[in-house]
Image (cartoon, rainbow, N blue to C red; front, side):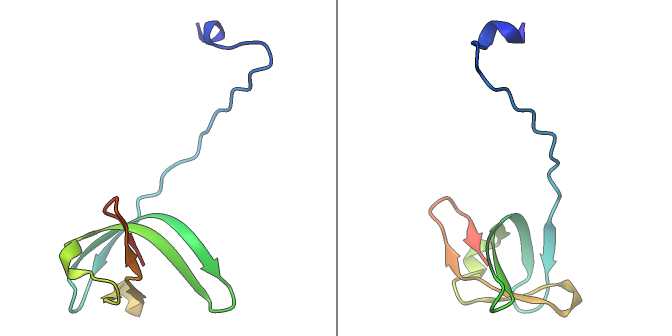
Amino acid sequence: ALGDYLDRGDLLVFNDTRVVAARVRLQGAVAGELLLLRRDDVDPAKNTSTYRCLGKPRRRMPPGARLDLPGGLAAEVVGHHDDGQLSV
């Protein structure tokens, strides 16, 4: 039983959040796909946000690359991380 693993004073938290699929197909010069993982930073003064993503093909997404998104939106790759993720 669950109570066998808890000591007096322990706090048990239930998380019922859901993961939203955030897959974006790229258009234009860099054809591929982005999977948005999380928002890292928001800068209201510049009206920008930075997101951690998985991107493929990653080799075609160097820092500085412009990524054309559906709806006329665009993103820029601002960095690569050791874990294989991108910041856009």
